Length: 324
Image 1 (cartoon, rainbow, N blue to C red):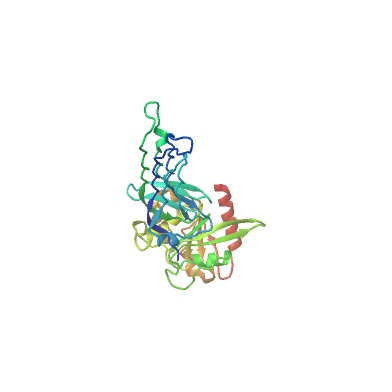
Image 2: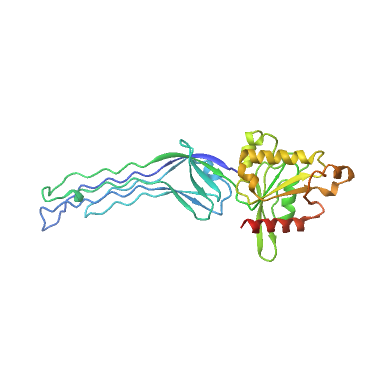
């Protein structure tokens, strides 16, 4: 199951209590204070992990608590620090504070870390309070409490190319023939209910990542259908492919609908390099051809016959190299 949103509560550890202790040695009947400091409480740390592809594991664990720092001891020994709470997330995870709605981290690189909450400091032991006028302090500090916060985690897939189109426009089929990805394919709308990623190889050692974004409908930018859940995955792509079925009666209107939804959701999406792709051209006839006269430029492909796929990949790689 592809889980791309969840909310969790996080608590960092409390610092350990400082120790009240005095030296007690055979030949030192009145030893001075030697109580050590308490250990620091554990932090709450998010770490991006390229081995993860969903927030599923995190979704079923609602609270993450770091360990408490241990109490100090005699001989000025500091208590052991509390264990950090490590939360591993997929690349592309955005961490947002629920109360303020501020984005506090955007984890896109493998092993990238974000310390969300610092553990509380350990209290000072009584050895710290010895002075010329106060030789035998009998008090120590308690540890400082940890911090608490609630975060929303949102995963936005990382891909070079995003496939955009109405339901049943041929996105999943294209992905399946140009990569090793095996998305669910059927001849009815909304076959794809979650993003699918595939690695498209070209040349000897080069490749790019293509994302099959679930089909959009009019009003998606306002949240109709599963609009927001789908559109957020387009934001990180470098190149957008508008896939339009060659049998559409009004392909210009389809393109305008898709383009409007993307611009309404995020105006910056319209600035990305784009290609218009006419799909399923094995079904093209003279009647269909008339409907495409309003377009100045587009690429023809048929994923069933593999027609036009090599020129498409060449165009995509040129655009990716230009953006870099």
